Length: 126
Image (tube, rainbow, N blue to C red; front, top):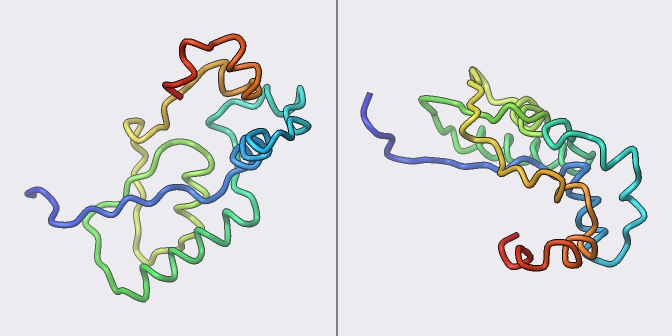
């Protein structure tokens, strides 16, 4: 099999973590609770909006009658939920660790303010 002519890359739908980070960026750190900050990044699920987004792109792809040679997904819960919710006919999803998001370690679990304070040298890289 040669190189693909077209490559479609679809990001996962809105996740629970996206909601927490977006609220923090708006100055609301109330969602940075002990329960939330201890959830491993790979375990975050889609929100209702994220499921609607995945359904929407799935319907669009089906309407385009695109045929794909391969279907790849990262092992994260939110990406597998996105893939399943897209409901693409005959899709056989293959998990690929190469597609995982960059892990920021403990930085994922702290507020923007804490990050700026404790990791100011790294602030511009995130």
